[in-house]
Image 1 (cartoon, rainbow, N blue to C red):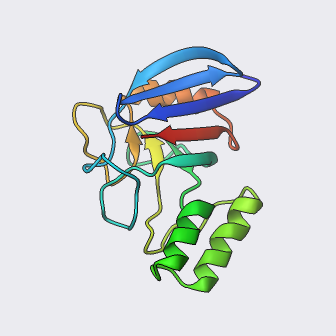
Image 2: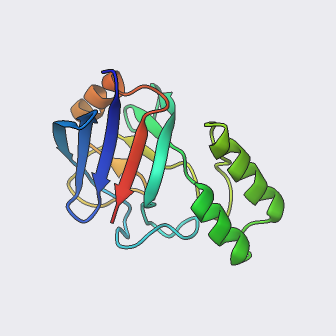
Length: 154
């Protein structure tokens, strides 16, 4: 694929794969165990909302295969700093990583390690990730390069 992008619609429990503006395929998904609302802190069970990019592909995920999402993003870092959830140094590290299209810090009080991975879609069960069936994450894993844009909508 030349210009793939993903749109995740949490309320509809769907992941849509686009090539440019053309919808290629829609997948059923499972979310964090507390799917309503945006992720606020580590352990809240929410799947973050906003604009991200794939920062890594993990062929050895414990959930078959996985695509790492660039969370926390700048908006979460601003909120975290304002609410005194993270330090100014953590905020600056997140902002620098996002601005350089790198992996943001994954171990902050905002949470991290948000992936699109396998493991099944029968119920919302993840810690905040997006889960698909193993065969479907294999399709996405093959089609999606690092850097692919991902938008997560409520």
